[in-house]
Every structure is written in structure tokens, then in C-alpha cells.
Length: 262
Image (cartoon, rainbow, N blue to C red; front, side):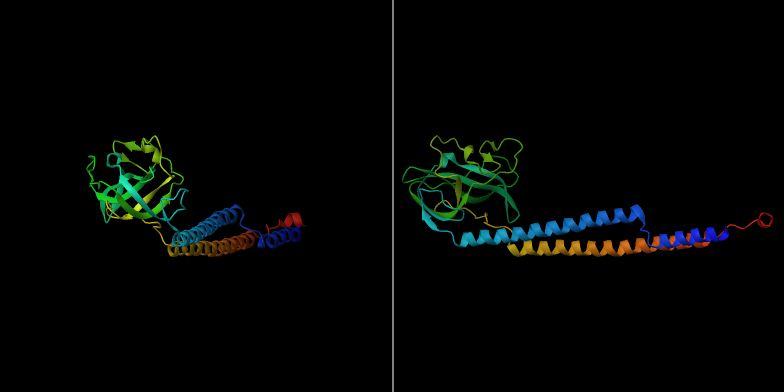
């Protein structure tokens, strides 16, 4: 009977030696695996954004120079427009900042010599927190303008009306009541010519190198999470083995009744 009990204890001890610490190890591995996967995914996303940004900047460098094209120009095209401003149709893009100043960007339609309408983003005007309608001087008569073309893209959700008085929250051609409509779906960022204000728009705010840096940071965090998961998991296994051996030593065989043994 004693030998049988010892055998059971010995068998349990040997079987427990390789027993994993159950749900604690599983939960540990699942949580840290999710962090590793998240870091890898975010790093890959930033790497892809860096590639997209490099492609975009390359397209800008290779963009053509056109004068009032009949077909929609590609984004980044260097445009030359000749015509007259429609000063009464000026609206202001709200909540712009430049050099720590709060202001607006002036948006004025231009009617070219062939009668078509183009929207011109003329630049930044500092207004401060005042909500009165801004005033901007607009040249009269024929003008020659040069700038970069930006095609209209997808819009983020906007809660509330886009236009309030002469201010708009984002550039949408539908904010202007123009029966003939604009020549193309987009606008020109004015760089030189009469009526130009302080330039604030940039074709690319964040350089590709910064996206690469973010990708490396995320991958570094993923690697750190993987190391922590492995080291912590090994610690859990060692603790469980130690607890199992200690329990087996302290249990021991029960004392045998001498009378029963006789």
C-alpha cells in the first residue's frame, strides 16, 4: 500500500514536471501576442505610408506645366491661368493656422479668358479668434496666376453645415452657387501673381523619413513585447514546476497503523 502511494506520488510528480501553468500562461501569451501583432501591423502601415508619400512626391516632381487645360489636370500640375477674379464670390476656409496665428484662407473663383471658372486658394490671412467676416483686397481686371493644382478627393465626415456665412469648414465646390459650375473638380493653390497672400498649403506635411522612423519604433516595440512574452512565459513555467515539486515533497506518505499492519 505504501509502495503504491509512493508510486502515485512519484508518477504525479513526474507528470507535473512538464505541466504548463494553465490559464495564466495562456492568458499571458494571448495578451502579449496581440501587442506583438499590433506593433507589426502599425509598423507595416507606416512603412506603406512612407512608400505612398515617396510616390506622391515623385509625381509632384514629374507633374506637367499646363495652361488652363481642357482635361482635368493631374494632382500637382503647375498651372497658369489668365482671367479675372470674381471678388464678390470670395469665401474663406476657416480655422487655418500659420506660424502660431489663427486665421483663414481666401478662396476666390477666377473666370478665365475662355469663360470657364476655376477656384483659386490665394493664401493665409491672420484673423485671430474674431468671428467677423474677413475682408480681403482682390485685384481687378485681367491677371495671370501660377500655382499648383489639387484635385478634390474623399472628404472626412463633417458634423454640421459646411458653409456659415462667408466661411467654410472645408473646400467643397458645392459651397459656391455657380450655375455653370467649375471647369474641373479641384482648385489651384496660388504661388505667384496678383492677389497672392501668405502661402500656407504644403503638398506633403510629413516627409517619408518620418513615417519610416515611426515604422521602426513600432517594430521595436513589437520586438520588446515578444521578448517580454518569452521571458515572462518561462518564468511562469519555472514557478509552476517549483510549486509542483514543493507540493510533492511536503505531501509525503501517510503514517501506517501498526496494528493494521500486523
